[in-house]
Amino acid sequence: MLSSRSHVLLGLLLSATFSACSQTHYLPQLTSPLGPVVNLGYAAYAGNSTSPTGSVDGSVTFFGGIPYAQPPLGNLRFRAPQPLDESVKNGGHVSASDARNWGPACIQQPAAVGAGSEDCLLLNVWKPANATAGDNLPAVIYIYGGGFFAGTTQGFPLYDWVAQHPTGIIGVSMGYRLNVLGFLSGNEVQADGDVNAGLLDQRAAIEWVQRNIVQFGGNPDEITISGESAGGASVIMQITAYGGTRGVPFKRAIAQSIGYGYTANLTLQEELFRNVTLVAGCPSSGPEVMPCLRSASLGAIVAAINHVPLGRVAPVVDGPSGFMPELPSRLVGSGNFTPVEFIGGHCTNDGRTFVGGTPSEFETDEDVARLVFARWPGVNNETIQQALQLYLAPGTPGSPFSTQYERAWTMAQDIMFGCFDWYTENAMIEKGVNNVFAFRWNAPDTVLYNAAPYRGVMHTSDVYFLFDGTNPTANAGAAFTPFNSTEKLLSAQAISYWTSFASSGDPSTSRTPYSPIWTYFTNSTENYRMVLTEGTSLNVTASAMEVYPPMEIERCKFWMQANVTDQTAI
Image (cartoon, rainbow, N blue to C red; front, side):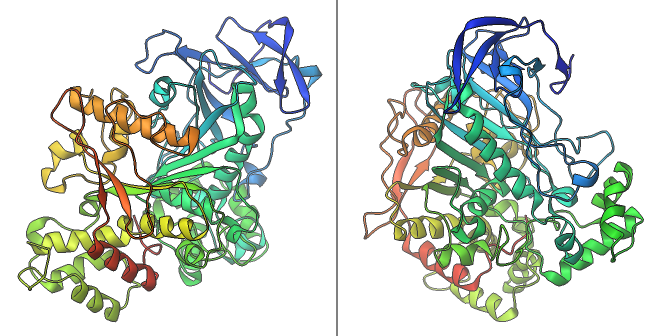
């Protein structure tokens, strides 16, 4: 099988008709025996027409492994992504690359030589097979989660999103550098490199889409970004980028289970940097350290990745002129972000995945404080005691919790996943955004639930339904199984809401016939959210609107004021 990056001269047949490329260029239409071709002027790609289930019925055309920046190798290691030369070559009469398959994933953590690649600044595009330049279809770009140390595009195929949308939509996903290669920071990197390179990768991919999506039939002015967990955190970081001073290359955003990696302070950044240089065999400071790291073998870099604590090398605050000039919670709270149409939400039991123990391990207040806050060593004892008073112990008059475990996982959920969406939704309203929506995902991932029923609608349950249930690639640590009838109904409903929002700014516009209207987040007196729930009927789900519980809002205000929610580790 040919690599998706292999350039193959295909003896292209040139047509007399031409298609638009950007606002000023017209390019020859190209054909290939490998599959449909999209011509970008500086490069062309032959894709693979297939259906969501993998059978070749031609409903969707997939293009995989398309570079959106120069390979971040050698002297470009630990630097911001560098642009490609996208000037039109030879009047657009270019050879094509085989883009029928996925490109390699970025190197993960734990890392291994041969598993993943540094050369991973690649993206994938799914389009309706009949979409052509000038169709001006909306585009949605998916950003995978994985704590900023793991994640691949292969786990999140967008076939269903494209195939199910009634009026046409383009799907895109991108790889971005992870762990040490994407987020190494410290004084030496600041002096000779770029911190938050993985976030800069994301931005470069979005801007590539804005420049080139027209050739796939897309509209550069109708772009939505979407992500879950660290991908949801990335969505917020893209919205708050540069403190909102430079705008954003997208119109809408969907953030699911917004989860942040550990936000290291300067002291910890330097400690982690020394760990990397020690294992890589480089000095820890001085003019030779960054050249040494850039010339280090991949094996040395892999060893360094495996030497740092899992998930600790992640996005950091990088100064007043940086991509992340302050913690995202403070940027949102101060209004220093770019307003966009927005959907935010989380899973009903996100916190059970990260509470730090099993139900039997939570018996006392001390257990709650010790296990829940072990993940957040920077939270002081005063804040912990205030939290224990706010989350009333079981048996206390007025307590909503029947067990210490329920109390503990609710606390963990609010800190890590349950509050940032509400906080951002309110901030968007204050900025004058009208199309703001909220949700709570209330159907469990079948595979994960069967393995640990006590975790309920745990973290990543939503992505199980939003992506192809027959996909054989592991996703968020669990393989998919084919949907049963009621699961399939909920999956189609959710995808219709997500893609409807991406196409119109309203999740109800192209909803399935059995789906309730999704009410706007606020009517000025109450906050609303959609609760997406699997039903027992073969004709309708149990999804319905609810009002945010006042007690939940009270808890969220406490955590946002404490500035804890984006200093967590996932």
